[in-house]
Image (cartoon, rainbow, N blue to C red; front, side, top):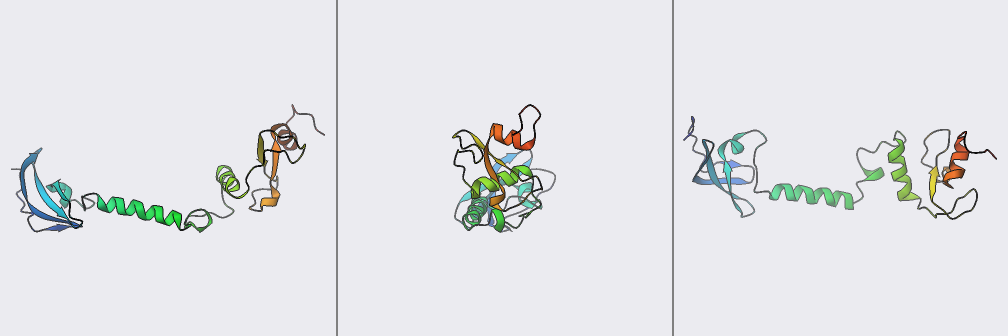
Length: 154
């Protein structure tokens, strides 16, 4: 038995109700047999029960919280509906993710008409969420538009 002898029998920690002390001891810490509200029986170290953010269920609580996060995504709580949506104040990478979701690529350059690998070309006056402001261009046309010195200008 450790320095302190706590009788946890009958105590409730979140969804766990302590039933009895196990005969097992881990590193001088008592192990308690607990019944979860969902019906599962688990063994938990005493100090894991007593600490502030300690064990509160058999694992069912974590699974339920993960399922709730998935339900929130399914309800549309992502993108513009997400509470952390930044509106126009978004970076280059996030903007392209949004763009791919709202404007699928055709694989045809809007400038030269060739069917090849294409990229979105952003307007030079900054980030905008108007889909009509973005062009689907092949790499040479995109570089030409951006003014790269090694591509001839038309």
